[in-house]
Every structure is written in structure tokens, then in C-alpha cells.
Image (tube, rainbow, N blue to C red; front, side):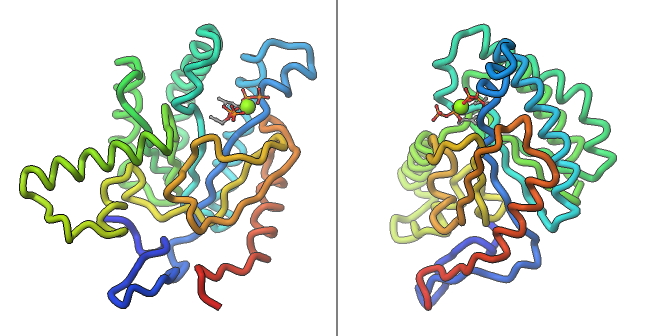
Length: 251
Ligand code: IPE
Ligand code: IPE
Ligand code: MG
């Protein structure tokens, strides 16, 4: 069941945000690896590798800044359109990352969760991520949500199909379908909606990231290319977020 930190419609149909005892949820569109590599006259894969190093720093720093959930956009459903060598290099980096970093992440009490379509992922990747989720399931310093083969539109379509199936089989009545019910069918049902969505590298678009979940998120954009994004950049984002006034439609 989704946590109540997200904007929910309560019994009185009044929109509200709930208390912040669960800590912050930051979501990051890690963009600019290719440009970072190009600036160094290096292949794109070099930028992706540097991007993983940046991720390590951010994951380590996040819990110390009150961030309890960190969602990272690692591979979109549209990223399959890239040349196959680049796709291969991205998945190889993921393999390496899980193998080299899992023990340390577990020791640091990080819970790993994967958010995305399983269909299309290689069997060994599925096993790696399943094992990582099982190993870290009781950790609670930080939930690291790796959005892998993730697309917000397909997530909504899949949720709709699952709801239709439950209605057809009699498990769910049409009048039970409300926003809270719908959220229970989304891949993100176990964690709050993001408080802040960060995009690096100067682009100002969602690129199919967290379409439903971003309804009341704050946004922050930076020109910094992802491989250069460090703990200081994250701290700047936390300060920026703390200045925002969230209203959820109220006054
Ligand atoms: C983000 O960097 C990494 C992924 C999308 C996986 P890009 O590879 O998109 O870098 P740019 O946008 O080409 O610089
Ligand atoms: C979004 O970045 C996807 C990830 C960061 C994984 P892209 O670089 O793929 O987005 P577009 O194509 O510029 O919109
Ligand atoms: Mg990009």
C-alpha cells in the first residue's frame, strides 16, 4: 500500500500532503553522460562509467541530508532506440555496479528496489536485481529505486490493464477505483511520490519519467552534467527544495 506522504484524496475528497516523518524522496533524471564524454573526446561509454561514479557519491550522501528515498532514472523504455553497443555498455555497467557495490550498499543499510518493465531485460540482469532486492529488503537507511526499462506511460497502461483484469474477475468493483486504488497498481506503490525531481545537463523535460507520481512534485534543473554532480550539488538541491512552498492546490 502506498504511503500517505503522497498527495492523497482522503475521505472528504480534500487534497492533502501528509507529514514528513518518512524523509524526503528525491528523484533524479541523470542526464549528460554523453556530452561529458564528448567534451573529453571520449566515447559515450566513458561518460556512462563516470556517471556510475557520480551515483556512488550521491547515494552515500543522500541519507545524511534527510533523503529517505532516491529514485534514479537509469534506463528508459525509449533508450532502446540507442545504438546496440551503447545499450550493451549501459547494461554491462549495471552488471558491474551490482556486483561491485551490492555488499557495500547492503552494509550501508540501503534497500534496493527496481522500478520498470521486466519484459525485455536479460535473464541474468533479472536474477541480479531480484537477488539484490531480496538481500536488501529489510534495510532502511535509504530506499534506492533504480528505474530500469522504465516508462511512465507504459506503467500507467499496465496498471490500467491489471485493474481491468481485476474488475473482469470480480476481485475489484468499478466504484472502488479511485486515486488511492490506482496508485496501488503502479510500480511505485510501496514508496511515496517524489518531493523533488532533479534533471541535470540543462534539459527541461520529463522524458517519460514518473508521469503519475510527479503530479505535485517540485522540479529543479541544473546545467551540471551528471558525471560532475556530487554531494555539494545534492546539498544545493536540498537547500533549494527547503525554500519551496508546497500547496497541493490549497492556500
Ligand atoms: C544519461 O546521459 C544516461 C542515460 C540516458 C542512460 P545521456 O547518455 O543521455 O547523455 P547525453 O544526454 O547524450 O549527454
Ligand atoms: C532520460 O534521458 C532517460 C534517462 C536519464 C535514463 P534521455 O537522455 O534518454 O532523454 P531525452 O532523449 O534527451 O529526452
Ligand atoms: Mg540525454
